[in-house]
Length: 209
Image: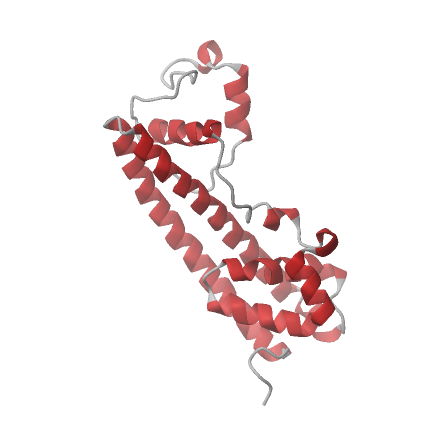
């Protein structure tokens, strides 16, 4: 009997289905927790505890990126399931599944899902040593940007924190806004500066307020 991490098409297909279920459940759980934290942040803003709200906000921003990563990995698993024939019949990693395989191998260790960790080991066994090392080290940019961008660990700029706080305050009808931000109750075209408009338009907040 092959070891659990060895490549086996039947077991890999089962593992993909398990990983999809767990990724979806974890993303939903994280999203619900983020909603609760947003309510806490709104309460802190209402009480004037801006510094505490800002610190919690950084945590929310990190969690938002994590949820985005989980959603991307879920899509990759679904893609591999849909194109499983390419994994099953082609000896090397086919270009049609390369992005998904590389993304999972690279990012799975940053998640808490053992189902995804097992799948990663199977894909590494399928791809071979050199391919696996390339995915782990992102040699020649083999890992897609949509994955690596969500794994960057850095302190967010204050402007982005302020924007998150501003949107949370608006969502919970809290009378607070950073200096220079428009009054949410005023007509946008009369008060919103081009720079703020551009910033708001370019930001994606995946978790619902």
